[in-house]
Amino acid sequence: MGNTQNSDVFFMRLAIAEARKALSQGEVPIGAVIAAKGTVIARAHNLTETLSDPTAHAEMQALTAAAHALGSKYLQDCTLYVTVEPCPMCAAACYWAQVGEIVYGAGDPKRGHTTIPGKLLHPKTKVRKGVMEEECGTLIADFFKKVRDSGK
Picture 1 (cartoon, one colour):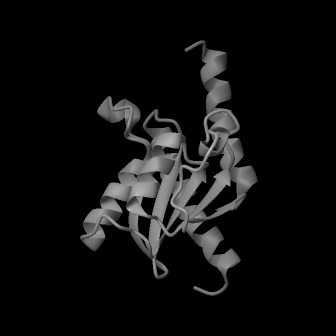
Picture 2 (picture 1 turned 45 degrees about the vertical axis):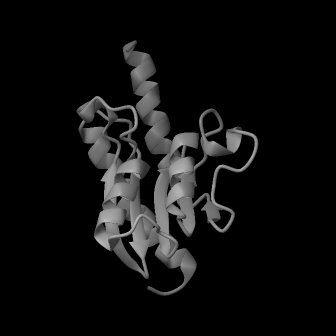
């Protein structure tokens, strides 16, 4: 796949495509992709409205799909690419799955896992942030602006 920066952009573009699927379904536009050894093993987007399930975040859906694909609940050799910083629930799920690496686009200063004191991620999990940050941030900001403007 080449260097880390190129592969990060490649996989983040796939996550953005998932976020756009969520948007087209009336969901909060967050997408996630999980890769193992340079190969996509899971893709997902938010399904909280579709499933009437507050836990159906993109990351949760992707973690479940990746665990099924690998036949293991542990994802130490995997990288989660997600368009927005994981919330505390998703970060904790990544902890239990022992995700090797998390790469996210836009930060979430109100609800992201970094707003909670202490460590929610597994101590061995590496984090890279800001990959395609502008595109990821614009997608989510535009969505919430439309929601506010519509009065919903």
